[in-house]
Amino acid sequence: MADRNFSSSALVSTSIGSRSVFLGRAGHGSLGFGFKALGKSFGLGRSSRRNVAICSVGIAEVLTDAIKNVVLEDDSAKQQGLELLDSFSRLPDTSQVGVLGGSLLGWIYLTAKPGVFLGAVDAYFLAPVQAVLDRALGRRGLKRSDFVVGQKLGEGSFGTVYAGAILPKDFQQEQGIGKRSRRLEEYQGYKKFQKVTLKKVKMDVEGALESGEMEEWFNYRMARAAPDVCADFLGSFVADSTRGQFVEGGKWLVWKYEGDSTLADFMKDRRFPENLAEPLLGRSREKDPLKRKALTIRKILREILVALKKMHATGIVHRDVKPANLVVTNKAKLKFIDFGAATDLRVGKNYVPERGMLDPDYCPPELFVMPEETPRPPPAPIAALLSPILWQLNSPDLFDMYSVGIIFLQMASPNLRTPVAVEVMKKELSEVNFDLKAWRKRTRLRPNLELLELGAGRGWELASRLVCERRKRLSAAAALRHPYFLSF
Ligand SMILES: Nc1ncnc2c1ncn2[C@@H]1O[C@H](COP(=O)(O)OP(=O)(O)OP(=O)(O)O)[C@@H](O)[C@H]1O
Image 1: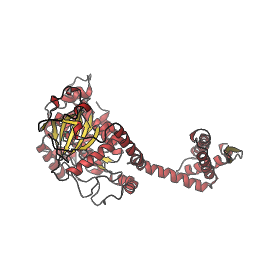
Image 2: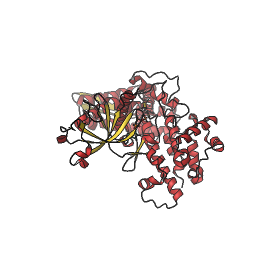
Image 3: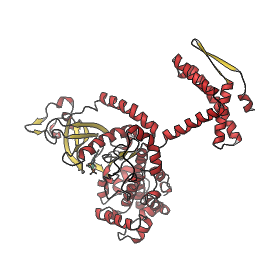
Image 4: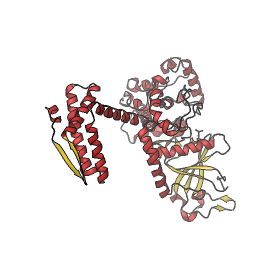
């Protein structure tokens, strides 16, 4: 019955401007036939194919009406759209199948991980819009005199990090007392200044400047792709003169102040994970101390995985996942910092095949995100076009997942938190081919893993799917679907 509808020859004449475009049921009918044939090539049954065909005729009619009435204001564009649809409906059925199949496959490829299509939108549209918006909001064009540096928060190999504040405009001229710069507390009303976190890139360490440049690029990229999972980046500046902590020519990166403790700081405390139970769980009704600890760890792990899932979905592998690179904000949210070693495999940014620049304690056994023979990336647009193939073949995101597994084990067992224990564990794991179950039987470290045994040992099962050889490892999305997140 439906098939017969397609052969109806009633033509609809649409007058647009001075020209007429004919588009009729016959045209829609053959479009329906095209979809039917496409359905057949995808192995759909007879009735499903008929439904596909009916739908496609409906879609074509709606589309034509939309073009005619709503979507296109401009008459000439409207006409072109209708002509395109008309010429398509006049194509032989086999060509229609080819065009539809090709478009569908193209669309699947362009939207497959890490997302060539979204990458192009990001690079050619969102990035320039972000630059314009940031300039309007005063986030670009920052300068030394905008800031006052306070206490030191931490130090890594490539940078020293301080708490600080943005000086209100009327204070920016009165910079120093004699040769030294004013301390924050010496400004009147300093408590009301907007607090920031400042990172001074080490000028005398090889690779630090490059790492700083990368960190800046990745912070802008993350601010567009997944702003909620990384510290809120305000921009960068180069110091124009030497005063206090500022050294002329030195590069600084600035974030909104969200907290001064990392997960590493909380884990160093003997009360971990209880010290995070209240901020993370609130006034949970769970009174059993063991279960409360287990729930806290599960919440932390879920936050890390959700953040990584978002990061990986946009083609970024962090490559330095460790407790010291997860800030616990004042609102008890975990956010990633330190993107100096990150790599964007959508465009090949910061991907240097022969260089692994990683923390040995958390780095997976394979050491590299891609096999070592992967060549240097071609220019960004070509790298972007090839990225879905490389991603499918190599699953570079699994690199970060090993580090998550080590953090998970350390959170569960206090005697795996010391640097010595991590080193011993790494050596022992390599002796059993990174089989966590085999390691547990042999290890001298006597880890107390009772928190992972709750809920029929699902936590332990998940840990052994993270700390393992790459081909057995779970992605962030798969780990989040693990039954561990449903148990107890
Ligand atoms: N946005 C931030 N908020 C709070 N603390 C921060 C922030 N950024 C950095 N820190 C603190 O400074 C320390 C060093 O920062 P970071 O890891 O970025 O430096 P790095 O030199 O790149 O380190 P690495 O040696 O790990 O590469 C962090 O471990 C953390 O304690």
